[in-house]
Length: 317
Ligand code: SF4
View 1: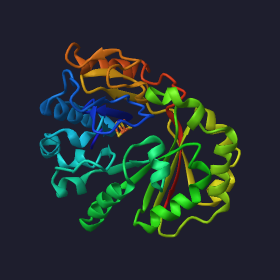
View 2: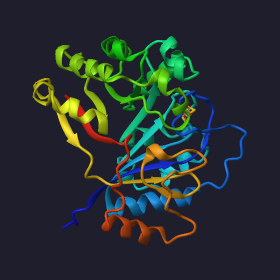
View 3: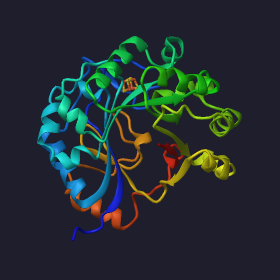
View 4: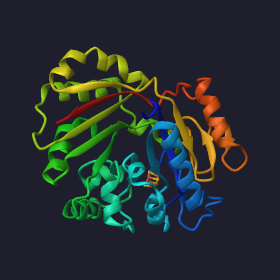
């Protein structure tokens, strides 16, 4: 009989580099041409992921920077056991060509494309990229039967258009959407006054989900709730549940963050390309397996962070 494994949320940043320069970049990514510094090799990544998947019920998020800038990404996926590929969520801006076998893309747990709105005007307030390019990518994925979801930041300019956004995305063949509230971390901190949602904005989102029927073509809608939004969602719990939403508590699940240079930390929201603000060790300098197990047993991976999601509201057909 297989042992029961403890859950662990893992965020791995596979490159500090990005081709875009989003004004709010939480990770404060370096530009192409900058020195990436020491990076985890293919074998480092494969060994680390494989060990985490063996030891934990790991929910693994791979990102960057722009993860598809790594020319060896397909080698990493090819070396991972197929059952581990299904535990990976890979996030991209959808702008860089995906030089990865379609079969392996199909085997991922989720392939997330980040956008900041359903019009170029909204998108480009934060992210300097045309949506046309992004939707060419989603069309390619649909044509090749590769499942994907959109990861949408709710910011002050798009939040009151949430219903219009959902309708517009669904009309483009999107079936899965995850909404995350704008967080003032990384480069986002400098624009806290322009983009951060007010309490009334967030209540508007919850009330829209309660009052407006969801598009029947939408298969999954997720809304992540950070600490300060939990109470207002729980006040509406029964009405949200009547609409088909489930409340999934995440506070009990510990976090582990691994930066592209092998630094180990806890909260993914405290990670930038140059520094993990809660770094406790480095993969190359520590017996990281022993250290992670020790921290897990002593409950040191559950340190609260105001930006980390405490609950997930999930609607799933
Ligand atoms: S937000 Fe993402 S796409 Fe934008 S600069 Fe940062 S890593 Fe790159």
